[in-house]
Amino acid sequence: MVPTAQGSLEATPLGHLLVYSLDRSLTGTLVLEEGTGSRHAIYFEAGAPSKAKLHEPSLFLGRILRENEGISEAVYERTRSVAALRGVLHGRVLLEEGELDEHTLREALREQLSRQVLRLFELPASTLFGYYDRLNFLERWGGPGVPARPLALIWRGVREHVNAAHVADVLGRYGDQPILLHQDAPIRRFDFEPREQSIIDVLRAKPQPLHELLGRGLAAEAHVRRLIYVLIITRQLETGIPGMQPIGAEAASSTPPPTAASPRPPGSAPAARAVSPAARAVSPAAALSEQAATPSASSGSSPHIESPELMAFKTEIRERAANGSASYYDLLGVAPDAMPSVIQASFFQLAKKWHPDRLSPNLVDVRDLATKVFARMSEAHQILSDPTRRNEYDELRKGGGGGAGEQEEVQRVVRAATAFQKAEVLMRRNNNRAALDEARRAVELDPTQADYIALLAWVESSHLNANLEDILARIEKALRLEPNNTRIRWYRGSLLKRLGKTGKAVGDFRFVVENDPRHVDAQREIRLYDMRKAELKRTGQRSPSDRPSGQPAPNSSIPPGGSKPNEGGRFGKWFKR
Image 1 (cartoon, rainbow, N blue to C red):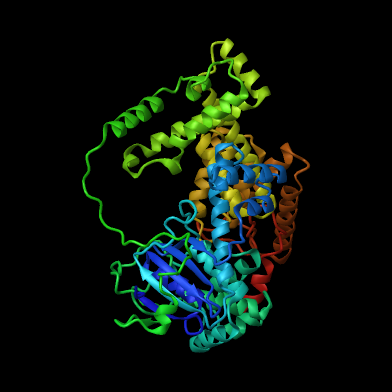
Image 2: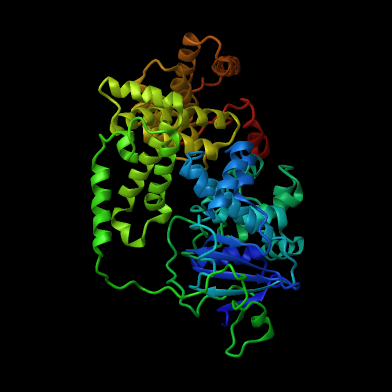
């Protein structure tokens, strides 16, 4: 089979191939072959890597979970053995046994995929590639794909593995023109670290040529050059071309979806009718070893008649989803005095039928309901497999409660509180992306809690291009629920300061100190305000006053987690006339 496009990594680096795929929203398989004959593959779905297979798999899911402390070593060894014995995926066993939730599993799978692709950045420049549009050679490899965050992945690859000669070439062609970020650039999707974000902040404050940016000493010169390089190749900078959108921006590209013969990465050669040696080198005939699926082009599905078995299962799904009062024992189909081994065996049998990965594509119209039912089954298995929690549950049932709906409500509140606590810890560690996920989870599970609403808004305020007025309105809503909440008052005061409404901000800081004398950050803000006010009075200038909405005050940036009050001062020094 002839590839749609082919070439070498020397002419077209892997980073450029990822950019091209994202820009064109390609769906297909990229096969890479080293001179030694080792073959690797990446399957793209709508432009984002969704699966990857290395010649010698080594980046295992369980080890990644251990690194992130998602599971213990004992759980890792036990569940790995179970997975090997049953011949199923390790992640499936972890999920079925309740050792982790679906969100944690998806994030671990996404990190595993990212590391696999990053490993391919290390391939020698002589590596050949062949792209096969609309073909999925990894269909039967592993479980369902979990799409990577493409811009963040591209940046990780560039930051760690880009060739200095390619960087020099691209930056040389860009020249010494001022670096101006595109107004629609989705910068947050790169997941930049704080030092990288500071470079972005400087460019937003003052567009400037590369040599001037390098002179500011924000980071090592090579690091700054790589960051500008990735902004250029992903079109995050203004080009002056009308309608030219940054790659990965919210607005969808107006370019029509490519046909099977249309996509051709820059630097690659169009496939010829006769198979050349290079084409044979990346031929899919032996591309992915005996474990790969036989590729087949996707085709539209035709109408079908539902079998009686399928219709019966759909009815069962709807009935179980509607019966929120069923007990955990009823959900698992076991007696109230069932032994733990019976409970476990029953759950495993149900998982074979109800697990989302096992659901037939013909169940798409009831898939969400089935997923909800299986989540209840998993929760029932967790509760009834734990002697202490099972006793508590049985006592609840004796008192007339214990229905799945009631227990689910209790668990929902507990999960919300846990997510909120995790978000706070992650925020203190400056892991804002993970904190944002947990804060959102807390609000979704329990949207009535003022602390949850305020924390989510506060974490979101750390993002570039955050709508501070909208965030302020949400914090105001939380404050109406709990007017005397000092934490929310601190959030509001900090946002007001960033918006230039200094007088109102100090009012909140004073409230915080009056109700929590140990709040050193609020004390510091009041002290700084009083010092500025005294200095202005001494020099005969006007006292600090509120600025128009949306106009931030100098030196007023207070990112979540707290920062030194004079950190913003360096911007004033750099751009002072």
